Length: 187
Image (cartoon, rainbow, N blue to C red; front, side):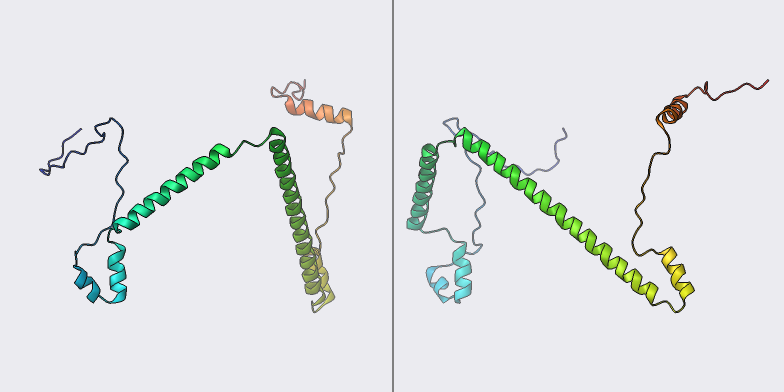
């Protein structure tokens, strides 16, 4: 690593206390840049006074009361954790079943909403196309528009035209990479 060419020396920060335990990192505490006397603080307008006092350290009684309240809350939480028992296995299984059923219900509701939205869109589209076809000035233009833009899409049914033996023969021809079945010598 290269050493920086700066001549500024930073103070050494001790990471371990004398007991060998790590000290928690210091938190940033915002403070006022100016220090005002009590008389000067009293002379400030109320808004500026409240802003100034917001960044002053809390009085000794307040800080003691806050630390005592924090200790009480931590003790209360520890006692609750000690008293709280893990739920029985049956309740856990029942809860998992319940969440699974709720998930399935929500999925079914979502599918139903999507299906209804699709049907509504198709109905609106077909009624608009029928309206456009009906508003054409001549019958020829109406027939032409109807053939180009059908009101409802026709369902396409694809059926297999090959029987089992023909399907087997087509598959064997498709899988023949060397061309042995299709290569013919004409002499």
